[in-house]
Length: 193
Image (cartoon, rainbow, N blue to C red; front, top):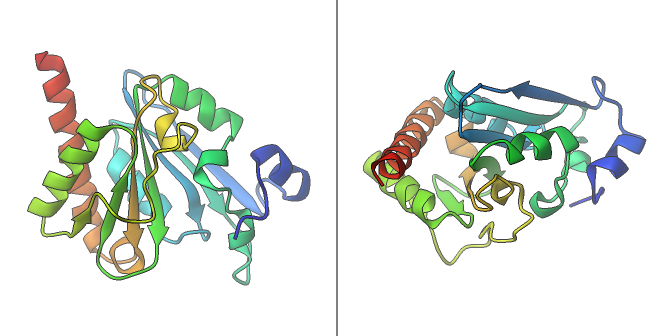
């Protein structure tokens, strides 16, 4: 599935604005960065879902496939190798990173990452919203320390793996709302300490 093992390697063969695009919105004062490392037509619906989660409060970085004819999978860089320099610099300026991914299956959200507090809050809010949120025993643990979700200043973050039906339907707005509530929960707990 992975053709490139780093962004530098990808950039030698692919053209910005033609093969891929970058969307960056840095929100001053935000402690949270939302990342779609496989956005655009790589994993359809992840950029849009990430933007809904970010809203106007959180920073956003999307790497987006723009190629025609289903060739965007060629642009997929595995999450623990995703090292776009602007994304890494942005991540370092934020405490928490939440990445949004797409996976196969039906009506499930797989949660991963090293931030157990955030993963717990996400599971609670998503379940309360009527979504099946799976925390353990799946193939998307997101626990590698170099995974883009774990590259924030705290060294731990979270990732969402959304099945196609959730990221490509109006329900993605409900997913985003539940995720935003979980982020507020975690921030409130942190400020109360």
